[in-house]
Image 1: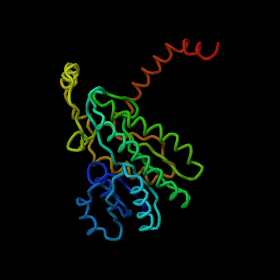
Image 2: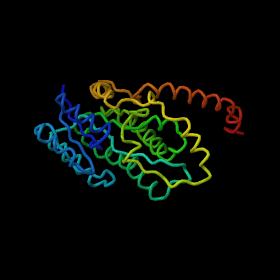
Image 3: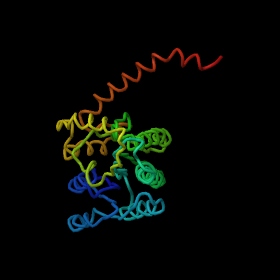
Image 4: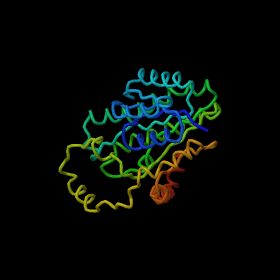
Length: 273
């Protein structure tokens, strides 16, 4: 059965690939971007099933207006995909104030505004599915990606609580956690900090490891998985994309549990005198 989908950040990367795939299979899609010029070609191909909306997701009132417009245009929404976001590269100390604030505004608050705007629509309809684009870096972090990772940790916590808050209303929430993919994440959409010399050795060490091409997934290969996710009657709260995520997360959480257990006697002693 065809779905009616609202997706942000649809002009590049996963957003554009998924948007095109939804339209090809017969879904109705409202897609947003800060600049929709690159989506105009789809209006000619899919005049009845495609709506492009220029949107800055950091503008809360504009977000609510865009969701209302899409809902009115199509007579309802089934799925909302919070895909918009970008990366900031640099050691934690190196990230300047404006870069940090802008990233938080987009990756956390933008996601929050879209989520808040779709909830009344879904509640009135009697259900819906919110898909939040997180990352494996919302579960564990890496050097030079700490601030970006912090925004994804925030999306994870927000969405886990949200899922419990809205399940009784028939609304599902899924965190999609991709590993590295060959998208523009590290390209023109990324922000890179000014380096501090104290981290040059670490930077050299990270660079010397090189890129294992097999670690990067093919974005086009995600299409079937996303279709299965939005068609599921019982979607998961968390869903990895790619073959690296679960393997790495098992290892990381194993190390965490081992460390927690070493300190558990001290932790228990701190509970009550």
